[in-house]
Length: 389
Image 1 (cartoon, rainbow, N blue to C red):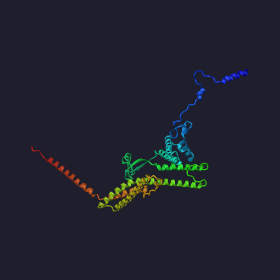
Image 2 (cartoon, helix red, strand yellow; image 1 turned 135 degrees about the horizontal axis):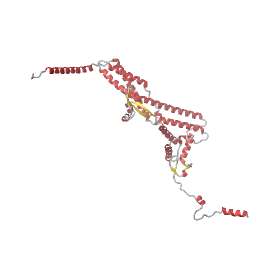
Image 3 (cartoon, helix red, strand yellow; image 1 turned 180 degrees about the vertical axis):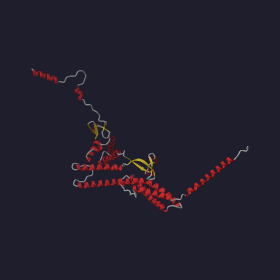
Image 4 (cartoon, rainbow, N blue to C red; image 1 turned 180 degrees about the horizontal axis):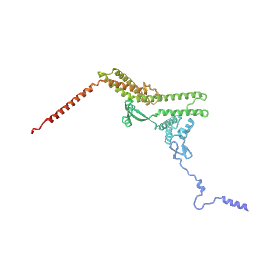
């Protein structure tokens, strides 16, 4: 009896009970499926473009489109990791992935490692330059040198200026950013090449579609030698560019003082040739210094102009053309300016000074004569008597 009662109670408990009123059962509500159209309303975390849910996958709270997912896999396959991309700022990351997605649409859906690598190099170079943009060097050069380099004269005159006794002219202190695109690009490219080489060696046996040009498995020594030669070539190019910058900077710094010295020597020599009495040795020394200043100035001008031409070239190999060495250095310029100033001083002191004394004597005589006339008139007025007496 007890078993029958339990069976009856159990059957009534398992039987669905009707809900009072028109309310639908909760089970029906939970089981009801709502069809949502697959619209492009999911923003990709990488590129920011919107896609339908079927065009990507959801990772936690973020949606990643299939194109950006493939880009990340390609970078990881060729470099071993995606650390460089992860270190991008939010704005740079979106710009990087958007540029690749736009390029993929333009190329008909294909996106090679060469395109991805070029975009990474450009973005990393810009980021490298922006980090070091606050590093500014203070250049102290004459106004003529800045104008030759293309600076507007009104811009240069806004900065502090002081007279340089060492160079004999005014110099302007202008803050200039010295980091160039070529230097930053070389540093970034060298780092990417090293990561490519390591990833290629690590996964050579398990990968078949690696986009990095790799030597056969049995020719590891050849790959190492090629990588070593590439590094040596990049180092030589970097060294040449740095040397060119030093030569051009020294030439620009010496151009203003040499130009001013050449002008002053020319005037002094002209006066010495017209003077009847002069120091012949000092005159010869001035002429010798003038010829030397002229040749040095032309060499400095040629170095500055050639550096400007090389900077405008697009080919990296053409930019790495070595500049001709200058015929002087900083210490030689200082000694040369000092010797030239002493030669001019000696020549000017040998000029006759009679003309200056001849002009002063007539003025003294006229003043003495005027004083005597005043004294005579005073004495005459003192001796005169009134007519009434």
